[in-house]
Image (cartoon, rainbow, N blue to C red; front, top):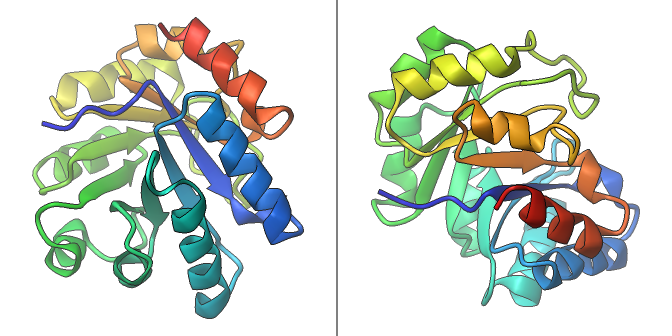
Length: 204
């Protein structure tokens, strides 16, 4: 079974106006101790996504495990380490056939039924959320709260990543509820190195 670090940064391209800004951000995350991150780009075309993904691989690929959001094909071409899919993307088993047995596969879930279904797949880790209200999605699923994290923990023995509105102020409560890791977007944007270091201190 894989081991997911306590902090799982999600690098959302929408927050960065230039590639240079993106590069500075991911390098600061790596300097702050992050060893895993997910690249997410919901609005870019495939060519732009691939260019950014390859740049990410050049910048931090040797020291940070890179997960591609949604796109199994771009994961392979950019030589990323895994893929994370949601409920509206390719099925986990379809993705597994594309990426093979060695790359990581993560699956997002939003309720107990989805968690049970995902647990039966070859996914390496499962995500549950949104735990708290979040502004990073246009149409977020209903908030599951800490109780949703506790329920998810009872339904799987796979590594559990909690996502949605998680900050330094509430991250410890999410781990206490049973999550192995917290996925964070917004609360890393300002001063990413210092923010990451603070997360790791809180989540020890």
